[in-house]
Image (cartoon, rainbow, N blue to C red; front, side):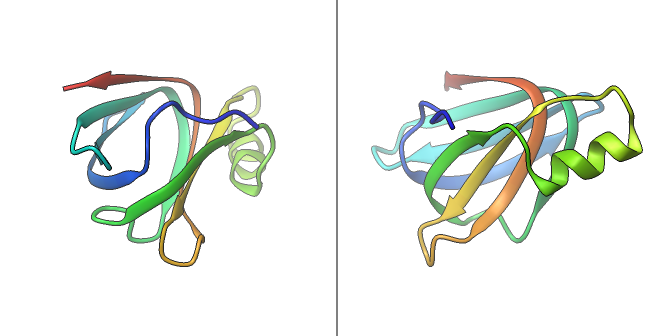
Length: 104
């Protein structure tokens, strides 16, 4: 498990294109970030926009990555998990090949 190098904060917006998912994120210091997930395979969220995030981490093997592999054999990716600061529940999973974070 590897931490994503962006501090606690709020998911402001999600923008999905064919092969990418872009997350606009404001961290606890009020810095704004674009986190771009490249080679997007799948994502699932439960009300992530506007939610305060306390933890972001990577996992190699999750139920969503297994499901995506069954639908698209040969597709692989890392699952990026985002947990809510209110109760610590996972509210967003993103399966993608890689990501980049850029302050805006």
